[in-house]
Length: 633
Image (cartoon, rainbow, N blue to C red; front, side, top):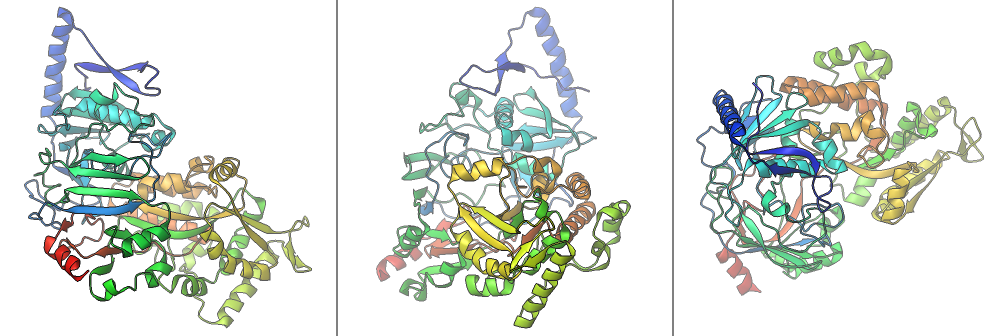
C-alpha cells in the first residue's frame, strides 16, 4: 500500500532565493471534500503503520547485541558524574555556525553535540545502530522503504517538538549540494506519514552504507532554518536539540559548549553515561607546534598527536614521569585503511602499464623509511583495509573466485596463484634485488636508461611531479626520490597553495600525490568514491588517480549490495586483492591507533570497545585527580 503524506507536502517549487536548492514544505488548507480525503488517507496510513514491525535498532551481517530493554552500552559508566570542563585545541579557523560548510568553515562539533541524529552507532559491534532521535525503525518486505518513528519526548532546545518534517527538511538540505547528491543518492523520495513517522523510499534495498550516512546526519529544526539561510556564513547561534548548546564563542578564537541540564534524551539507553562535562571548549591553534607547547603548559587538556616524531620525544617532561601527564593509544576500529598512500595519475600514459607501477612499488624501501622517519612506529599496509576480516589474506577463497571467474582475462594471473605481500627489506642485498627487478620491469615495458635518464620508446624522459599542499610530503618523498633516481627517473614535489592545488586537480594536471586512504568501517559507504569509474571522472573525488576497471566496478557494486557478512567479506577481499595486484597505488603505513596525550584529571570507562570508544563523551571530570595535579604544581 502506498504511503500518503498528510498535513503538508514536499513541493517541487524551490524555496525563495534565501534558500536556493532546497525544497520547502507548504501548508495545505482543506475544504470539506479535502478533509474527508484526509480522513481516509489517515486511516490508510495508520493501517500501514500497524502492519510494520518497529524495532529498537538495525544491524547488518549479524544480530543486534543489545535487547530492546537494554539500559546502556557496556562500554560506558552509567553512573559517571557530571561536571568539570574539557579544553582541547582545534586547527579549524572557523567563521560560521551554519550547518553548511559550502562557503565558510563551520565551528568544530557545532552539529555533532548540539543536534541529535536518528540513530546511534554501537561501539562494540561491527554494523549495529540503535534508536536515538528515532525510537523505532521498520523496513518493508523488499527492504526498499525504511520508516523511522520519532521519539515522543524529542524536543528542540526552545521546547518545540521534533517531527518528521524536521527529518525531511534535513535530508533535502543535505541532498542540495554536490557532495550530498552523491551520499544521499540512495534515497528516491521522502514521505511524512504523520508528525512522528517518516518513510524513506530507496532506489534499492537498504545497505549498511545507507544507514551509516543517516547516522552521521544531524537533524535540523525546520521551524528555525525556514526563516534563515542555512548556507550563509553566520555567527548567529542556531537552535539545537542535543546534549550541549553553544554558550560563549569568538570567531576564530574559541567556542564553548554548555551541557543542557534538561536534555530530553539524557536517559535513553544510547546516551546514558555519556556527555558528562559541563563545558566543552575548543580553542583555535593554527600551528601544531604551539598546540604541543600549550599542552605541556597545561593550557589544554588533551591532544591527539598525528606525528610519530613528536609522539616519540616531545612529551618527555617531568609531568610525564610524575604521572600527571599520560600517553595512551586509543582504540578506533571504525577508521580503517592506509595513512599514507602514493597515488599515480593513471590517466597519464606512463602509468598505464602494470609493470611500470610494480617497478615504482619495488623502488620504495618502506622499512628504511619507517625506521628513519617514523621511529619504527608505523606498520606496512599489505591491504587496503589491514587488520580487518575484509583484508585479502592467503590465496583467494572459493567465494572470491566465484565472483571474478568469468573475468579472468581482465585480472592479473597472480591474483589466483600467489599470496600478495610487499617484500620486506631488511638488508642492502634485498633492496638491491628489488631495484634490479624494477629495472627489468621497466625494460619490459619499453623504457630504457640513456645517459642516466629513463626514456620511453618515444624518447621522452620519465619524470614524476608530485603536487602537494603539505611541506611534510617533501620529507616523506625525498628518500623515495633517491631510489627512483637510480632507475633514471627524475622526481620532484611541487608545493602550492589551495587555489593552485584545486585547479590542478580539476584539470587532472598532475603525475602523483601522497594522500590517505581511510574508510569508515565497514568501508562499503565510500567504495564508489575511492575506486569506481564514476568517481574517476570527478576531479574532486577520493579517486584522483582515476582508477577505472570493469572488475573493480563490479566488486564495488557487490560489496555495497551484500546482504550477508559472507558476501561482504568475499567482495571486499576480492576487491582488495585486485587493487593490490594491479599496483594502482603504492600503500605505505596502515592507519594507526590514535595516540593521545592528556592531563590525568579525568575518569575513563573500564571497558574500551575496539570499534568506536566514546571519546571524550564517555569520560568524566575527576576533581580528586585534578586537585592532586594542582597541589603538585
